[in-house]
Image (cartoon, rainbow, N blue to C red; front, side, top):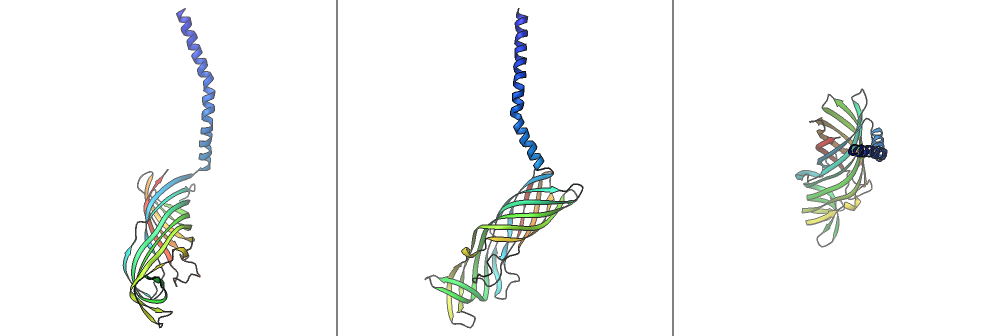
Length: 264
């Protein structure tokens, strides 16, 4: 009798397991389906996350004769975080990369200038415009959402070079500073003179929202999933609109971006 009872219990347990198996498969099926869809969508593509620092400046090219010397330069702390997908074409060293990058580009400079066109506000609130001779401090700090589209080329197993265009949207920006220890000629270099101990300027609201440029760089694979990189980002259009009169020459953001990447 005991043996019969034991046999019945084992049989009931097997029946319950057999009944539960389709339900478990049905529960796992949607997850497997999602995984299969992701694998199909990313067939041959790899996801890469990068973090780094921007070093450079926003400058006219070439330097105008009004800027007689750069007395000091501070690149400030400018970081970048990027997510990208990249693909290497089968049987070829060529590939492509498409990414989105959150980055800050900034600097602080102190320059000696002569007959440098300025619009400034004195401490008492008085507005002045003309040709300034003296010293100018500038702080630029702009945060962009950048979208690079690059062609890549693999050199051996460890090196990859890349190049291509990018577009960027600035959602937060600052371009401000001060003029000090000098004088201003109202209107032009022959106008009436006014001594300037210190006056300020702020062109942050006049910055251009849309930027585009080119990017080129190289990446070295240190381990299977970890690599280090260095890129040069060169803005093609000025940070100010063409009809802006506060700065009389075009200024371009030119920055080197160095950091590391993790490839999934």
